[in-house]
Length: 355
Image 1: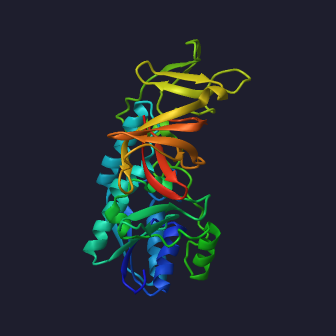
Image 2: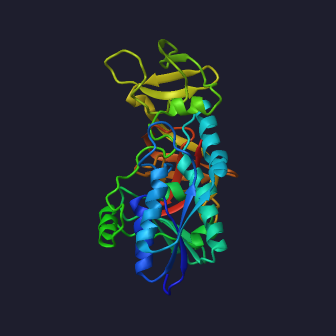
Image 3: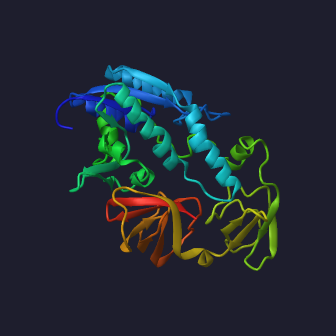
């Protein structure tokens, strides 16, 4: 952004969104802070996460220090419909959902851009570590953030072009250490707040307990842990929260490490095997969103299958509603339900969900 203008900043209560607001204010822009009330934190873990009351308070304190207005908008119904309910149903079906993608696509960024327009703001800003640049055809390209450890482009592949065109990411060119240094310099009160690690609405990490509570107590019930030959090695209390590649919490004896290879919802079996059994040469993805124009034929690129996965070389073949990726080398723990995001070097081409 060249000339000063009104900008709506999404304030999560964390240091990244706070420093994004502070930098824009320092540059002379008129900043409006908005926090979306998405979920009411449960149990003993009601602090230090973006769904906790403390986080809304931290966002308000940052805005007070910066001298900018702050609004809290209730989006709990949309968050439940687009994020929590699918998260529960996917876990019950033996898949591994990626709720942050759905949240950015359907709840946070799309809704925040609508709010920005209602506030008369010409731009929306967030604290994501990613970059946006114009392409020669007039569209917008999504790029990895400069900080490889904090890059969040994987979670943004589903953001529509209209939002990308009006989105500002002040931290995209920074390292996390730079952002904290700016926050301290600018007097942001939460400059040393720890980063969130778990899902914001499951802060204790107990996915099975969460799914059981929010599925009407149905759960999936007791099932067997078996090997590839069908031999029963033990029992489990429900397939929810098992994910392909998981090693811990299998509850089976033996010295050799075993990993989840498949989850079979119809029989409630969890199939385990060795690390060598985890490799997959290809995957299929559906419900694909292409960041720009959809590719019209096969091409060579790189595919990330988890947020911290090093994108792997693959041939990508688009189909009507998805794509098939054939890897140059087998990839470990390709989990149905996770996002498969396609890159050309730093540029996000698109992504979908592994089936």
